[in-house]
Every structure is written in structure tokens, then in C-alpha cells.
Length: 268
Image 1: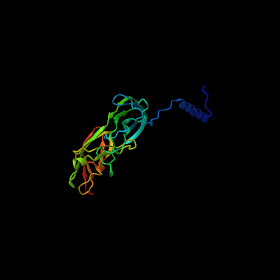
Image 2: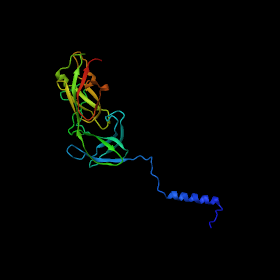
Image 3: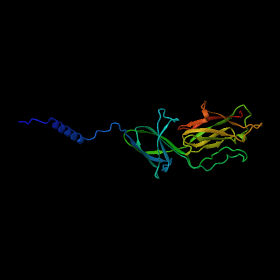
Image 4: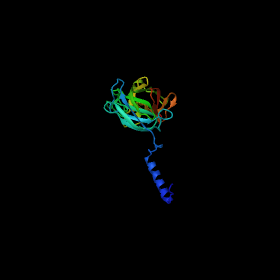
């Protein structure tokens, strides 16, 4: 015969205590709010297969348009080790772009060939001996690590075009044109990059070599090229593909830029 429970409050307490013990023995529920992440790792190589040590590697969130913009988000930055290896940890799922630009040290700053020593001179940067190397490698990250990337860097891009003169004054002679310098200055990470320049040929054409993808400001200096009345030529407009480049800003994506037209004027 079962014994009746004379103390219902005590029974309720015993039941509650047993429930707490049972809950404590259950495994913890997974964290539904945790954001998954993965790692990206690989090696940087030059165009001859050699490892590139101590190179800065930047990880950018890829925008909806896939190209460069002023609102790009730099997710992380790291540096390759002595063997050219790099690793990014804790990367959330998404689409990214790995960017690297290896710029050799300049030989020094000087004057373009044929320029005089008197008066103001343009900031001319002679080409480097070692090539500029770069990459813009897309990477998709899911829940698993992305490992074993072997990224071969490409050689620098070129910018080519011509210098024209408006009708404000007679155009300079062929000899005078060769005293005009065209330079592009980086607008991204200027502490790691440098300007690249070259002189204009007698026919007004120019070629700038060894550039990485990025945004640049175009400059054209002719400080000692004057008209018969002593007026100086200055940069007025910059055009590419029939389109005016506001503030002389040029964006290099992953291909050379050709057909750049710089128009100089003597108007105030």
C-alpha cells in the first residue's frame, strides 16, 4: 500500500531540485548568434617563381560593383614572412580581394634628360631598376579555411597618352616639349607608394611605366616652357576615352590606361 504524501511543499521542492540536476547534466546548446569565421593563407611569388618576403598584403571587402571606390572597406592587413607566406584569421564568410603592391626603392630624384639647371624644375621620378609587382586576387570565404593559395604577382601597368596645347598661344617647339614632365601621384597609401613620371617626347606623346592598380592624381609640369610673351603653360584638362577626369584623378583597375589626353593652356 502506497504511503500518502503528507508534506506537498517538500515534494515540490524535491521535484524542482531533480529537474535542475537533469538540466545541468545536459550538454550546452549551441550559440546561434555566433558569426562563423575562417582563415585565408597562401604564398606570394614573383613572375619567376621566387618567394616575396616582407610584402604588405591587404584584405578588402569586395564591393557590389567589383571595382574600386572611395568607400571600400579594408578588412585586415598583414605581411609575408621570410618564405613569402601570409595568413588572415577570423575572416567572416563573404567575397574579398587580396591586394599587394611591391614597389622597389627609387634610384633617386632628378631632372628629366635635357632640362636645364636654372629656375623651377618638375618633380621627376626616374624609373626603378626592379619591376613593380602587384596582384588583385578575388577570394570567396565560406565556413571552411581557404589555404594553399599560390599567388603570382604581375608586373606594373602602363599609362600612355599625349600632351596637347590649346589655342591661347602658339604651341611650344618640339625641343621645348621634351622639357615637359608628366607625373602621377598615388592617392591610396601614399606612405607606401611613390609618384611615377616621365618626359614628353618631341611629338607630344608620353609613357609612364611600373604602376600598380589604384587611384592617382595626374600632374603635368612645364615650369621653364614659356611663350614668346613670357606666359607659362599649365595643365587645364585631363581626358580619357572622351571623358573628363575631375580633379585630374585617374583610376587604374587591372589593365593599362592608354589614350590619356592632357591639355595645357596659358590662360590664367
